[in-house]
Amino acid sequence: MGDPGNKARIAVLASGRGSNFVAVQKSIDAGEIDASIVVLICNNPGAGAIDAARKFGIDVAVIESAGVSKADFDKQVVNKLKEYDVDLILLAGFMKIIGRPLLEAFQGKILNIHPSLLPSFKGLDAQRQAIEYGVKVSGCTVHFVDEGMDTGPIILQAAVPVFDNDTEDSLSKKILAEEHRIYSEAVKLFLENRLTINGRRVFIRQQPV
Ligand code: GRF
View 1 (tube, protein in one colour):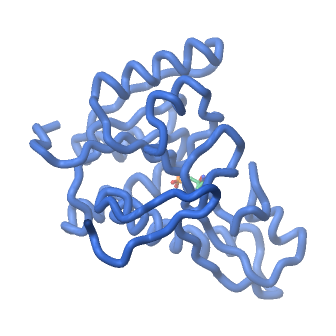
View 2 (cartoon, rainbow, N blue to C red; view 1 turned 135 degrees about the vertical axis):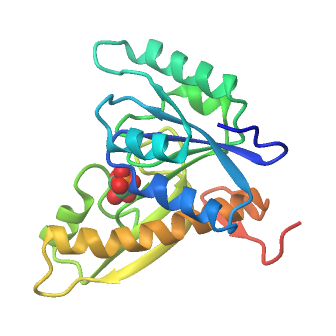
């Protein structure tokens, strides 16, 4: 893709359909975020996100995780991120735990989106967990990534109601619409340098500095 000049350089890591990736790219195209997604890294060669990246003219790096040691996989991902000189890494449906080498190389620069109101319903099938538990409110969370699974400091959350006739599918759709909104918002806040991590808490400055 073209030279992004002085714009912030984003890498997206995805394993699946890539709708959050597309939502962030659309916010960039709409002029809401001043940045460029310079590379999509996928561990799954069949991911829908790859087709989306090609349509946008965004570089794709497929780094397969199957049959590779975690250490080798992490090393290849870190090298690719360094090659692209990225300022921010977005996990968007990336089905791998982020290892220490990546965390150390890009400390405080990795965000994730999760389809529940953390700390409830971490891990896989969060929407199904919410339905089965019987909560009346669920939602999504954008957070900094740490060594745990869905445990890092929370940046933004959005809530949606859970009605009696909701299914895993209908709840997922409601949550996804909010995911697309708050992921872009969190990216904007990060790039405007408005986030401060204080222990588990993330403070948001009203004005860019
Ligand atoms: C989203 O629900 C996200 O919260 C979770 O994985 C899903 C990815 O969806 N981490 P998509 O690939 O962005 O469409």
